[in-house]
Length: 325
Image (tube, rainbow, N blue to C red; front, side):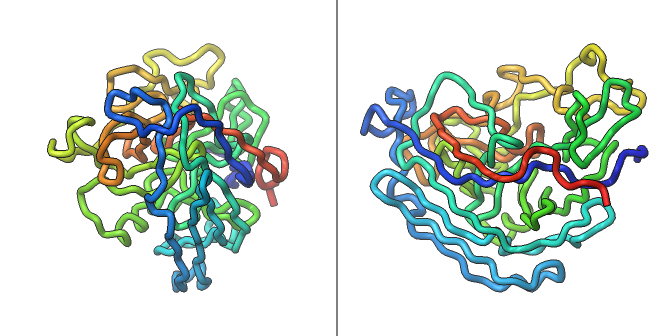
């Protein structure tokens, strides 16, 4: 551990509205002949009202999903319905609290040819089925020399990763999650205790809806994306650390490659997924095929962009996270 300030610095942003304009009413097939897919009828009536007895919570987790003719709607209180780590802790001094979650997702998401970056100051990348936010980026930075680093939202050029590095400790628990200054518990990686609660084993498990309306699955997928009879395997992202550090990066003997977001590069074909951790294929819920994302054990863990059309109206305090105390 270096001498960086041990405070958590993710940006607090509420995803208040998501909407798209569709140009087709036909379902996507494996060849993606239409760029619009209807998700109507899939988990349109899902609700949780469950007391969480974890020592750090002792509150009731509530979430409710419904569908209108054009939108998937979520209302929740942000309290997870599974075991969590100890909060506050030495590296994340925030207490889990209820927050108002109200989000809308396209019921007929539209696949595009370009990636849209979300998360951080632009809004949540997704919400899990239990109403907990996916927010994989951090506000922590280092300057070019590496002598001035703040995990609480510094002004340096080099953006810290929450997971997959040992230089900075963001106080995450076994779910790759921790707590923002307003009390919002949120995921940076695969929510292992939530998966254990779902208890579906080594199979494709839908755990969230992305900001563009496409589904997100955890870890497992079919060996052949278009064949539901092919073997199940652990799906891997297509990122690797760069062979050479970028110019002006802090020295790698101080912070090994992989510490910063800029250390990673997408290499098409090196894994199973595209630059947004997604691919088109069949899933248990969409046997005709759909574009979908994965939460993975490998970088980026949770996607940092979406491939569908999305309009985000976000609010909240400016970037920077929690000031040192």
